[in-house]
Length: 112
Image (cartoon, rainbow, N blue to C red):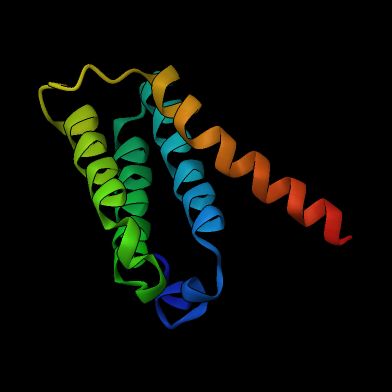
């Protein structure tokens, strides 16, 4: 487990939007390392993203959003290690996760 402090309960203090933004950061790292030709780092980033998705699924406040979260998990696994039956692209994943990161950053800036 890479995210030990998050697994100990800290992850559950984040909103779903913040959780998805963090997942998106790991997905972005996986994409960037894939393009740089470093499959080892890309795999590690992808598995960290899966770990964060699993923590998000385990978070009780997200129980009404499990269908979407689990579909994201399935499609990401298919994209990175499957046959890409959903025809995902790097740009699709960036477009999916960007609004979460943008909103999280916007709310953080407003609190400052």
